[in-house]
Amino acid sequence: MIRQRLQTALAPTHLEVHDDSHKHRGHEGAKAGGGHYRVVIVSDRFAGLNRIQRHRMVYDAIGEAMRADVVHALSIQALTPDEPR
Picture (cartoon, rainbow, N blue to C red):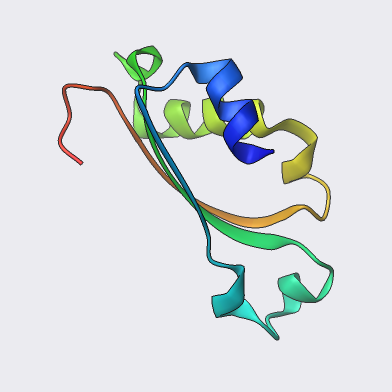
């Protein structure tokens, strides 16, 4: 779901979505079923935007899953194609 929404909204040239939920078993947020994810996304749409603006775009693309119990924690690396990974 995360991958599909990011692909649709941000047309990335590179996208990695890692589910790190297994590292957080027993964590308070994980008890409700929310997962811990790590995203590396490269998109031309981030050009000219600061880090906070880029993160907001990612949160907006994921939508209600960020407010529901689907995603508890999200680590984001959002870059343009010109920036090193």
